[in-house]
Length: 206
Image (cartoon, rainbow, N blue to C red):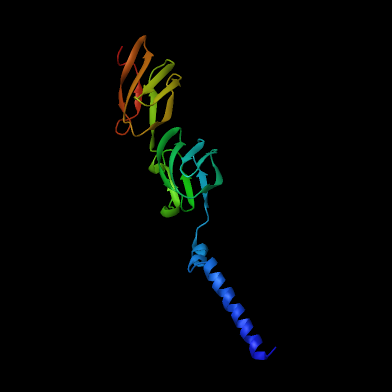
């Protein structure tokens, strides 16, 4: 075979292979594949509170995670927007969450806020759950069983004579109705968590 014929044959084969490749992989496909994001992303929970933290996610997939107090756990989820239900400080709230990017959920001590954090990639649960610590003082020399309630939340607390307790309550409902028995009579009234002084349990209704 003549040298020129061999070179021409190789060129024809090369042109055929390139043409076939262009049909199999249209322009831009390879570049798009390189830019495509992985289908999963990481989610980390830092629970610095004194209660279990539980998160339920509903979106492209369903997930749930429970993290004990003062601990950290991670999971992998499918990317996308999710509706969530979270329970922190024994309070439950709902919302939406962007899990197209890696997120860290910061759960601060109940009644507090997370320290400085990276907003695009971190979520402070105190933005959703806003409890408040109130002080309750038994001013009598009797044991008291206190019932403290709103339409959505209620608390049953036992007090020894002259005992003082701090109680975490849900801030979103300010006014509470309370009742207890002391001095052989039913004592009751209203308490506003944000603006009232400590709740004193005495025998005002005697």
